Image 1 (cartoon, helix red, strand yellow):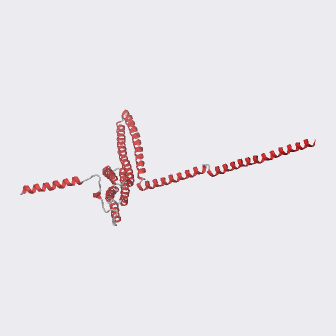
Image 2 (cartoon, rainbow, N blue to C red):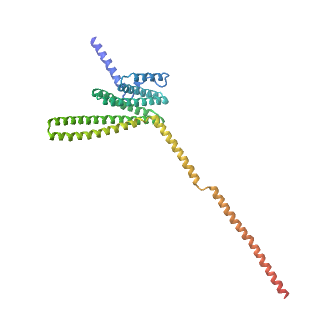
Length: 323
């Protein structure tokens, strides 16, 4: 009996684990979805989430909380899409984008502050949270791609724009992290070269001092170069952070309106510079009238000339008769 119970228990556990494995889909966040936008409690749910962020103890904790809330919003967008409520799906999608952008900003601020403080142990913890957020972005992009495939053509453009922008922002965050690591390595090597120079000076070996000074100069140049590269990466990330879907959509609409206005102006200008058909007709009519008048004058002159010749002949005949 005991063996039977063990066997039954094993089967149940195996089936439970198996169903969990097969039910799990990395490219969905519906499991994280909270109260959806079609509920009157949606605003209250967002207020509670904002309170969670406020109560987070540090910038890195706030960033982590925001990234979790962003995943929740994306899951809610999936749910609304599955229920064919596209306007509400877009509402949740916009909230996702704004929240994820805020998470990115918070984690970068946390990294900068921690690096300035020089606390390397805390920096490692903050960078671990940064890596988790980057991984969440990757998963979110997979969810967005899958979500896009389910949408009608008209609704795909918005999701495509979100994918494009979030991809750019994720790549910018990765670039900053990479350049920061290179800069930190260069800084470490510079400090080591600086310490080596002090040791050489203490030894009094002129050759060793000269070699240490040359090495320090090389490491200083390398450090300055990496510092510039890091600054460029940070600036590029700031530029990508300025753009969101709402702003991009507004700019596209404005450009479309501007193009339409320019086309109308060009068409109007073309019409004004083209010859007027009415003027041509009038000119032709005037020319024809002139030609008709000329013909009439010629016709009138011909009978008058003929009458004068006949009168002269009659006069000559009378003179001959009198003679």
